[in-house]
Image (cartoon, rainbow, N blue to C red):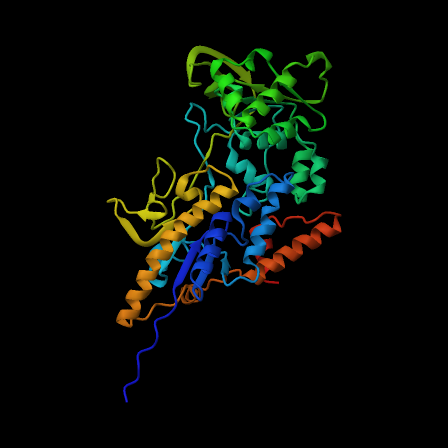
Length: 459
């Protein structure tokens, strides 16, 4: 009697990156392929990516997204493997050999460059680095220089507002958040008195959200100053506020601030919002000493050009909040100009323009750092729909030939001495942070270092 061949294994899918994009993709794959083995790989010792390490600690409403991601993973068939770095602990080709599909959801973790002379002087900081520090990213430096009295922030989006708000915030206002002691102590010792925020275009063309802008003006001990001449709208600006309610709310807030009598503004810290000023260069001998800006003028469509009129602002630090870029994943195609993984609706493209079989991308690594959580979910759906269709063909082909499939990454990690952090390990970290918070009368206090996170995860 002939022994029948073994049944083909169920589909196996790996998702790289445990931020919102990766969690949503993993959940959708698990739902679309019942019985599939879905592994969620994360290079940090804990999940949640930029929701945990990219949102200011005084934004508990947005940080509540962590709770929803936790609910999606807890008790789900998705297996979480943290402290596993693709490109170091395991390679993309190795993943493609062991899984029917691999989804890159690595996000955007680098500050976009500000291409002006002096951008690399000491005291010139990318937004991503500062955010990582005050969010206690395990790979961020333990200390941050807050010795500047006058600071410039370059950018016209919510990240620029976040940086500005955190710079001027009273340190003790962080004592209700998950901020660790070393970050609180650094803010408590800050020498800062004045922040100048510079936007290249006009007030109706900023990407500020109305809520974030209002929060800036609600900081205790802080006055926000706006030049009335810079919030006067041209025809383009009037069209923008007529068509878009958020733009109208932003301009209304700026106008109210501009109408205040400067002599009544006596707070110890000040924020000056400047419009129609583009950074021209950063000056200094051995570190930042000034930012030079060029006045701009808008055309009827809101586009701006330089006027040749320059101003020098004495500052001792510059924070560049002009966007984020993804980092390349070793072994996967990457577009260094756009800072994304090249793709067609989530199917990764090779250098010759053809698809890389089995390789997909979602989230900011797919489309760039734009859109909110809702966009991330719909973006994951597009990628996963293509993945499901492709995987069905791969599994059918394997069944037709009776071919077996290589195991997942466990053998590789075990053979290389790696010890990943499982979901249970994250639950131990979570419990330790909640306990640390309870001791201080807070919801939680973050564990800040990689070594301490790993120790907590492994008990």
